[in-house]
Image 1: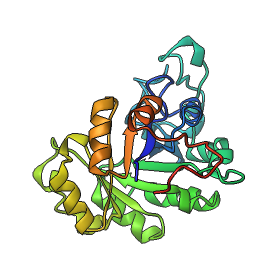
Image 2 (image 1 turned 180 degrees about the vertical axis):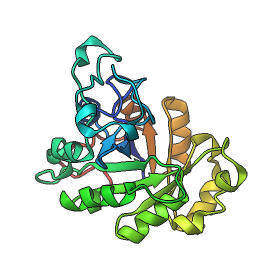
Image 3 (image 1 turned 45 degrees about the horizontal axis):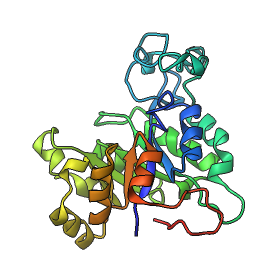
Image 4 (image 1 turned 30 degrees about the vertical axis):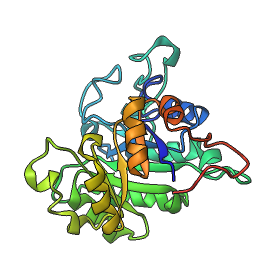
Length: 265
């Protein structure tokens, strides 16, 4: 079965990351879904942004957790990429679900969007992120469209406690401390999927994942040859900044095909 193609922070090679524009472009380029990051504002609203601060990707400054959602809404999150995206905003999680409603709930036999939602937190105890994210997911009825991921096994444990129906994926890479890169706390997260950096995957790893009945979704792959290697090994999903390039590399049909030919995960 060919891997799903998930657009990393949207089609972020071509549009400003973690914006509605990047997510819509990912759809146009044939992605099966998107990956994005969520954290809380000062007033406890889940917003879609990767960095702890807004400085790199907006015309503002400051930590996300110190700004209100109204303050964040006034920022320009597009011009840093190109002038074509001037005025693009940092979206709330609710705005993403609203803006992608036609992809999340398509008519006919078109594949719905899969959302890999990364919980951006290093906290051992919660700041409310998991609860607020799950509340928005429930409000928009997208429990079967979302996979929650995190580098933090404690966050995934809290998400499981809040709603065990929403599947979870444990993120890790070779540069983490040994107890995280060797996933010693995997039992605490109880994931349905593993999300290793692509360089960690070989035939032995895939055999282990199959024995454990775990899906393997890997990141971040923009090189066609590497995508082909991973597809041959049987990964379930490839996360990429260039969904068009990687889809072509693994010779997948487009996600928007209406003939039902695109395979499901």
